Length: 625
Image (tube, rainbow, N blue to C red; front, side, top):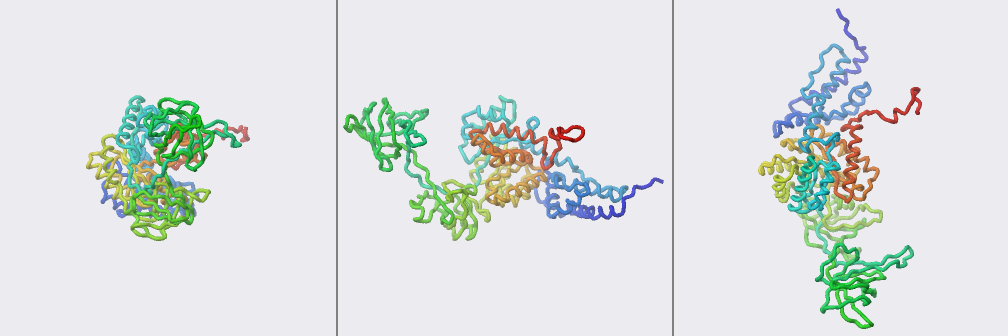
C-alpha cells in the first residue's frame, strides 16, 4: 500500500479560505445570471467566447480582490492581475493549485474549454482582422493621421509606409470627399509599389459641439525693417507693391501689397511713396526697382497697412498720383478672458463682435449645437478648447448660459477663446447622438473606398447598434468599426458598447485621450485608461492608443522626455496613433524604434525578463567589473 503525501494541517487551514473564496467567485462567474446578457444580444461567432469572457470578467471585478491578491502572491501563486484575457481559466488554475496543496491526491476542478493562452490568441486574431497582419517583429501597429497635403503628395504616403505606417487615418472633419479619394488612391498605389499592406481608416466627424463664429476684422499687414539688439536698423524692409490686376509671385519672400489706382501710374526707381499708416504715423518708402506689374520699395520704419490705406507717389517734390491698398485677408478675432469674467454662451449662430473694451460688457459667443443648452443647469462645469478654459454655469436657460470663468491654463492669467473650439459639459447627459446625418453620408463613401470607419463620440450601445444598422443597409459590414471613447458617458457605457460591437467580426476601440481627459478630469485619465485597457483585453477587442503621442516630435522636431515614456507604454495597446505635423516622418521612425525595443521588455501588462546587459557586468565573485 503506497503512502499518501501529507500536507501539514496548519498549511491546509491556511489554503482552505483562499480556495473557498475562489470557488465562490468561480461559481458566480459560471452562473446563468452572469451570462444572461448573451441571450439578448447578437454576437458574431468569432466573438462568442470573447463575450463570455467579458461578462465573467465584469462579474469578477464587482468585488474588491486586493486582499485576496496579496494573500495569493504571499504563497507564490498568481494574483490574477494579468488574467483579463482568460479570467475563468486563471481562477480555475489557481483553485487547482490550492486544492493540490491542501490534498495532493484530490481531483482538480474541471478546466474550462478556453485555456489560459486562448484569450491571447483571440485578441491577436481580432487585431489581425481589423488592422491586417503585423509587420515583421513589431506586433503593435502604427496609425498616422494624414495631412491635407497627402491628397497631392504620393511621395509622402510612400515614405510614411516605408517608415512603418500600417494604417492611414483620414479625418473627415476636414477636407472633402475629393481630397479623401485622392489620399486613398495614393495609399493604394503606394501599397502596390512597396508590396506592403496599409489599411485606410475614415474618422467620422460626429456631432461637433464647438464655439460659434466670431466676426472677422479688417486685415492688417505689419512690415518692419531688421534691427540689431540695440534697435538700430541693420537693413530696411523690402515691400513688393503690385497692381491688383497683376499675378502674385507665390515664391516671393518679400511682403507684398496689392494696390489700385484711378489712373495708370508710371512708378520708377527713385520715386518716394508716402502714407500715414494704421496708427496715423507718417511713413515713406523709396522705390528701388519697378516693372509693368508694380515696384519694389524700401521701408526703414515699421508700418501697419490696412485696406483702403492711401499711398502717394511723389517725384521731385511733386505728387504724381495716388494708390490704395486692397486685398488684405480679413483678420481672425477672439475673446480675451480672465478668471472671474462673465461669458454668455448663446444659442445664436450669427457671428459676434468681441467687446471693444475688456471691461465694458459681458463677452458673448454662440455654439454649434444650440439645443444642448436646455440640458445644462446652474452649477454645472463647462470646459473650452481642450480644457484650457474652465467655467461654471451661474444662470441657465434654453437661449443662453451665463458662465463665470474659473480656470485659465496660462501663466498670464488670460486666455484667448476663438471660434470653432471644443466645448465640453462633463456632468451632463447631452441630447446628442452619433452617427449624424453627415456621418451617414460619409459611410456611403467609406463603403466603397475605406477599410475601417471610426465613430466619434460613441456614447451608448444604441449609438453602436444604429451605426451597424446603417452599415448593413449599405451592405458594408466588411468595414472594420472603431469606437472612439471621448466622453464620460462613453467610458461608463463601454461594457455595453463592447457587447454591441461584437456583432461585427472586425471591431476595435480608440482611447481618445484629448476629450476624455477634459470630460473625466486630467487627474483621472491614467486610471480610466487603465480600466479601458483591461475591459478591452477581457473582450479580446484591439485598442488604439491615441492623442498627443510624440506630439512635440511631430510638430517641432524634438520629443519631450515624457513623450518617449508614453510611447513606450503604448505597447499595452494593439495600435498607436500619431497626429500630423511637419516632422511626422521622424515621429513614425522614432515610434517604430521604441515599439520594437519595448516588445522585448513588455507584453500587455506582463514584464518580460530578458537578459540585461548591466547584469552581466559582474565577475564570478559577484563584484561589478
